[in-house]
Image (cartoon, rainbow over all chains, first blue to last red; front, side, top):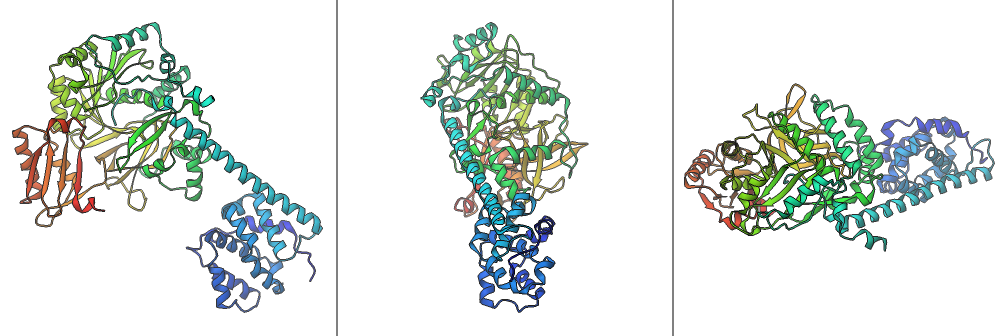
Length: 187
Length: 453
């Protein structure tokens, strides 16, 4: 099979139009049933109960990304390529998707252009593909950039938040803060 | 080193950045008056020029922008305020991203009070108040110095509804009275009131040198406004003070109408019950035009909702938890903050009022015949009695203990009122000794079954 995948833009567009139902948490939608629907759409038998159970046991934030990925892969380009089913099933349970789910909220995957691109590229990579019109090197580079940008942003924000919390905790403990200011009535 | 420098005790110039010759003289007069109490604390207003300008702008908005909305339609400022909190306040950034309609409460404040402080806040301006939590421990509340000063324009609004205005300037404008075993007392001035004096005093005789100092000092101050809790106000009324304030504001615990009437008669001025909390500042005040237990929402920048157990707003007339958005404290912006108090909303045109405010979770007592008696019914039944404080406890076997401090005639009336609610349920009325009363009691309802939870 050629590793050349679909064009990037239609997939980005499809992801941006992800119906709100696919963003619901696993308490509200049955993600395993969605996955089985996907296999039926490909004209394949659904995964066996053991495999289905493994999927259902994923952490809830991963399951939220799984439903979004399933929406993405219902694009015509994938539906006519049932040979990708096995790689798809592995990708849904992959470390790369689980890690992304821990860092990024499902809503951001759909609403933030960089995160959209990151998921589409991650997905193509997981299926052993790269976007049509790109070289494998460029595709790999671009994914690294998106991934590292996100990681650095999160680390920077966390550090900043921790430093700020420390600053305020110290400020609140000072005698001059404790002395407060005159209040005109009891509470 | 920087921290040590920052933690030096405050100088007078830092406590009172806007002190003038005249207000300094007023401050000295309060501090050094021959009948003044033994001040136990130093505390100033901490307002600089920018802070004063903020309070004056707040006062102008409070005069011009009436508090009001229609049920089901939040005021126009609310969505922007919430969005700003989501962007600028760490606590809401997390909470509202997960659930845009989430509520929060005192437990959230206890866990991480600093996370309520906006990103833009200058930590060197931060001050801390303490409020008691449900388990008796003190929760530190981050605040900006304008927060306590913004109470004054709110008090002016409440007083204006009774035709009273404060003059300020070259006089003592406000005295806060306490009646406790021990509490902070201090002398201060208010730049917002043009340098007028303000003092917090404790009526406990142990705080004063001579027995008549309390009366002499209060009369020498002759304040325009007196604030205090109902017990302290009752203690003040019992002293032979001659000064006549223009108005009295009662807060901290519910002021029963009978005690209000007695205080009004004693001092010849309006006595206004203010429903207020440390985290929110003043929320609502009792109107003169209503005999019912109604409090009109006071700040122009406070949105009040009544929510049911599942967090859904309930229509006017239906009781639920009082939940507020907005508030006077820029370092503690509140978004759907559950007060832990209960009541219903009613609207007079667009002006919202809180009906039957119960300043804690309702308790359901049982009469001997099994009939439920909700704590608010007890409060209402005692409205006509001038009690400074009381508590009602029901033991597991159903026996009731009512604790208060009153004369024999009022005690008979209490018994009568409670029999009207509880029928033949065994009832004991205990007169609380003065030393216990001084510790600052409030209205409390408890049942043994709940104590063990």
